[in-house]
Image (cartoon, rainbow, N blue to C red; front, side):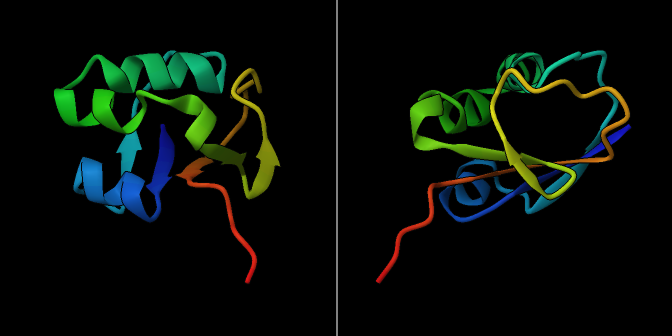
Length: 82
């Protein structure tokens, strides 16, 4: 079981701030595939991975990052300065 967190417009598109996901995914990319196959709202949120960042257990990483032993995955848009 992995806790998945959604921030900013990702949360708005999916309609949830967080959820617990029972997954067989080995990488973040596989988790995204599983989530995208659930419903259109997930597919829409993950339609452009270049517009997303991901963190595994609060460490910024890439979509090919392994999920073995992970407890939390967070998806969010890139941060902007200002």
